[in-house]
Length: 414
Ligand code: PHE
Image 1 (cartoon, rainbow, N blue to C red):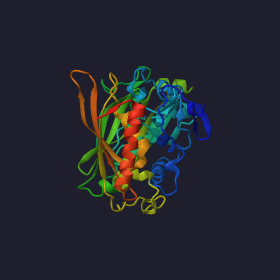
Image 2: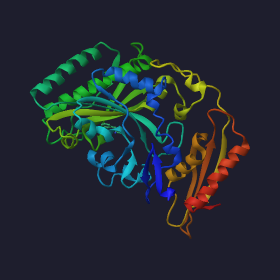
Image 3: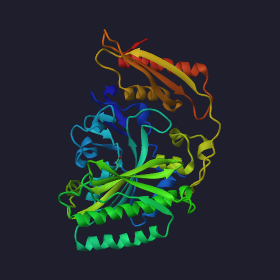
Image 4: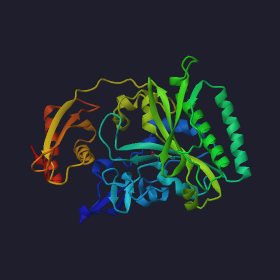
């Protein structure tokens, strides 16, 4: 029957026991905000692309990937939490919505690209608040060199040029060693090669940070741009790093990166190369650069939002008045031995309320000492970005939430 198939971007797919994509999520697949004219995410993409003019710029890969491509090909262990149905969206056991742009590394390297940027929508199940949304946009960047004297010469020349750019600029960098016992060189790598590549990665990204944030955070010598490098861990890079930028009194996590695992390059058929990759989230950066206060605004079609932007220009967003919010609580007993997952609750609410939900908070959780059942209470904050919601409308949405909880989740409302 129709109910065991899903139509996505014009193609039908079978569903199964682990299918957890919702209509609210599927409606986002065709929007591709990073390619919409004058959209802040598109302008930010162009700005980053202009920092890498001789790289291939890709932005039209399908969000449907196999779990193999999203995880296994990138050396994720079989028990990695990101694979769980509570964390990722599955169409069925063989197909999922990519959780990161790294899912395309192997295919792009296999095509023979050696310098590339890839922009795409990515999907993760998450809580609901002003800075989390289950769909967001990432940009992956990568560069690989011949793992020989000529490749390393190219790398060193580029390093010298980039270092000169940085020396002339107003930036303070807190660095960590390229390689350390806790952030090791890969066993198959010549440590001198890995060091040169890691240095190229850091120089490329430090100059990018200067281009993006130099204006907002480092406009004078009393107040230089501060960038901090931290050791990190990703299954598909080693050594690995995170980059943070100091902005308005806080260190903000901007991206993850590292020296690409040789297994990835081997799978792609380019084992004679060595190189780096990074992945950054566009919304986080755009919210800072444009002063956009709520991540849902990126999805707004309200002219008061869209008409503020001009393609290629970063301007300060002028907030229009917020409409009032409306809080509704719901308390229930989970089915015995099966406490409802917060992400399942959030997806249910999002599916009923769409972008009318601003925030969901779990305000109570307890296990009954005698029956062992779990009781939970969630507070939902409803607010439209575009209009005032009537109490009747919110009550209508809330009662749909409540009946779905009863019918689909088997909970007992308290
Ligand atoms: N894919 C990682 C993430 O989404 C970021 C990353 C990309 C890390 C490339 C290392 C190299 O968190």
